[in-house]
Image (tube, rainbow, N blue to C red; front, side):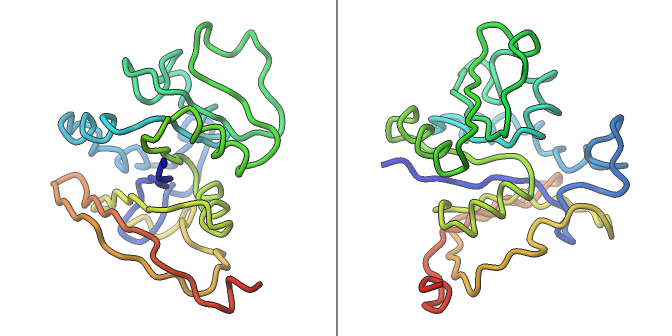
Amino acid sequence: MSRVVFDISLSLDGFVTAAPQTAEEPLGPGGEQLHGWLVDRDYLERAIADLGAVVAGRTTYDHSVPGWQADGPSGDARRPVFVVTHRAPAPDVVPEGGVYTFVADGIASAIEQAKVAADGRTVTVMGGADLGRQCIAAGLVDELSLHVAPLLFGAGTAMFAGLDIGHVQLELLDCLASPEAVHLRYRVVGRDRAQQAA
């Protein structure tokens, strides 16, 4: 069975974007530095090796598709990407022959479709804080993969602010340090009973 991993880069003080965000700088001033670890090709190849499918939010898709093009974030591996959206974009702005499926009936549906497509491999939920918070709150995530960059933004989009889930226990599975980021991987091992009953 596929495991669902929420994967995101953030600053040491917990921001996934810097402030202020603009159309020219969707990650805010200096926000691109959050992804400096992407230069580590060995790490990326290991991550893609077990990747079966991706779930992304619409904002992530809109900001990233110019770089991803038709192949999506997995490049030549061409893993399917399920984009959670309220409305699919016009066909003429979607890359021809792309790996994208637009899902308008909710996050749980997108994850279920991604699990089928992944065929037992990992489903990675990537992108924004809002999508991640919703997946975590709904209990749809088995693991968290956090790439913590050596940056302090002080303001921006906080990853875990407003996450009302009660107490969640995490087990550290892996910790790998590089100059660009500390890669942390946690398994969700439990929630408090009061939250489960709610």
